[in-house]
Image 1 (cartoon, rainbow, N blue to C red):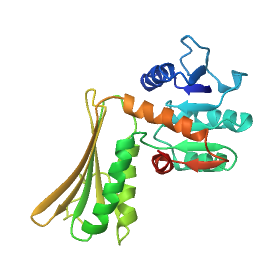
Image 2 (spheres, helix red, strand yellow; image 1 turned 120 degrees about the vertical axis):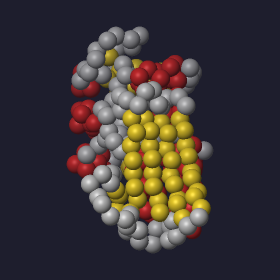
Image 3 (tube, rainbow, N blue to C red; image 1 turned 135 degrees about the vertical axis):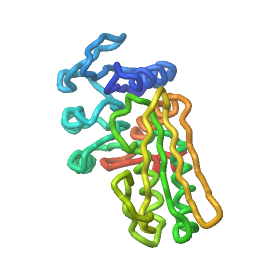
Image 4 (tube, rainbow, N blue to C red; image 1 turned 180 degrees about the horizontal axis):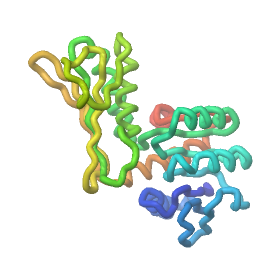
Length: 252
C-alpha cells in the first residue's frame, strides 16, 4: 500500500488526483496540503510542517508559491515528490535541482503520456524539417490559467530546439515588430478562454506545404493519472535524482 499526500488537494486537479487514488486499491491518501483548509475525508494541512505521519510520496498540483515549503518538508522527511505544477521561476528550478540531489523528484510540465509521444515526434520532425520550415507553437487553455505560455508549450519548443542545427530564439509576440519573420525563431502564442483543458499545436510551415502536430486534452484526468503513475514510478527508483516522463515512458 503506497501512502500518498496530495498537495493542492482542494483545487480542481487535486480533487481529480484524489478520485484516481481512491479508485486504486494499492494507494492510501494519508493527508492533503492546501492553503484552503476545507476538510475532506483525510486531514488537510495549510503548512506541510504540521503533518507528522508517514508518507511514501507527495503529488503536487498547487502553485509555485508552495514550492519552498514542500521541498523543505520533502527533504527533511525524505519523501519523494511529484511536481506537476507549472510556472516556476529560474530560481525555483534551481531549488528543485538542489533538492533532487537529496531525494527523488519527478517533475514534468505535462503529465500526459500522449504529449510525451508528441515530444518525440517533434524532435524527429525538427531534425528533418528544421532547415526548410518555420516553426510556430499555439497553445490554448481555460481562462483561469495563470502562466503563459504554458509549461507544455515550452517543452514542445525545447524538444524542437534539441534537434535543430541552429540556436532558435523564442518569440512570444510580434505586436511591436514591423519586419519579416527571422529564420532562427520559434513563435509561441497563448490563447486563454472558456473551459479549454489544453490544446497544443506545433506548426512546421515550409514552401507550399504545412505540417501540423496537435495534442488535445479532453479532461484533467489524463494529467492526474500520469501524476499517480509518476508517484508509483518513484517507488521503484534507487536513489535521489530528477526524473521526468522520459524515464516513466521507458519503464512502461
